[in-house]
Length: 518
Image (cartoon, rainbow, N blue to C red; front, side):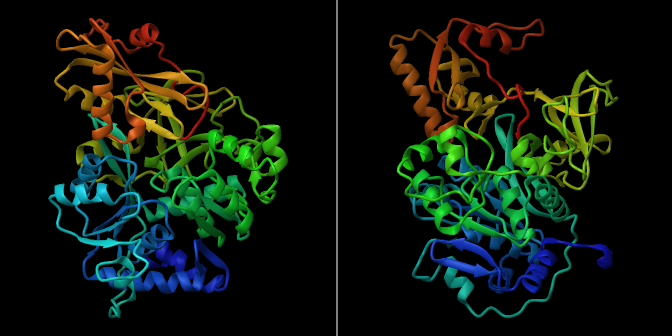
């Protein structure tokens, strides 16, 4: 390994502690840590975990947002291990699958809000791991804080290759099951620099981690803020009044906010109780613009772009390269992009093809799936599975997923995953899951079902199928309603004709009408 020219996330933290020792790195409730204090804690966490976590080992996080996610990432970086932040909104069966798939050496879990679900996971998983409760204020035996407080002996420094994975994020549905994309030190560092460039992040940036940290859309700004010496403020979940209080109290300059949350914040702050002029925001409704600072950065002027988890976040941004015909802007300075046909040949400008990407942000591969990794990384390019178009001015437009994707709020719902759960119910012979436009959440999930026999009470049967999904999937993935039909239309090749199902049952509004992170 070429040590002279290498830089990993552990190096980044050590330099932050040296360059900005007294600058506030972390705010989480009563916990406030400078970069020097964060580095000391990370060292203790790494020492405490070293007896259980070998190089390449997995640390699974089953909890809501917390500063411990960031310190665990840096501790994994020091240990040459991989942090896996699971989607806490998943059902117990889904989380059990993640646990069995990841095979973690250590699981850090949260009792508040997740206790009953975690009990089911622990009872159902086949994995033997060290389980540490992170939200135990007393630091009792078996808790995360108790282990961190223990006098663990010093450990030999592990040589960590920046090309090694350090973060794994579950994404997309492959034959009804998600896969974990393995993201490298080098990829995350490259993304940190690119995000700082387009979002105007510097040492004075104060980022409110109000989006879920199991999503790359939040995590990429968290890491960029830390890398630039800014301050990360954490809250367990997005509660509008608590967000207002934190923005006011901590003078947050950035946050991950969606329009429904912004609308609720407008309502709650009609009396001007909270001063959130510090928040640098994109333009929105007049009442919102009057509460915040509509800030002049490349990102606030032109928010948006294209990316995916497998690319550590953004691959293009509308804030890069000035005006463009393409709705997704231009590539990150650290990415090369082509639009190709099914044979891998580049298509002319104006024609649609698959978006393929090369650069440090591309994932290492999928956890425990060499076949899927080889397919996605064939010919020396990361094949996104998304359709795009290069415009005549060289800019790019994301057209849509090659496989159907439903967008509800900030969440991606993959029909194949919902269809697999519905197909397991004895009432379902065939099913097609579609997205139906919604003015608030962009799309709702609808299941179009062919039953195995006569359905006497359609409403009751639909409720039964929705509850079946609720028990086996995260709640946001369940259908909002179920439509029963005699048969599903087919294409000439015998596949279900999704376009025809959409046309017959109100489907539409899929991602691709404008650029956006997937």
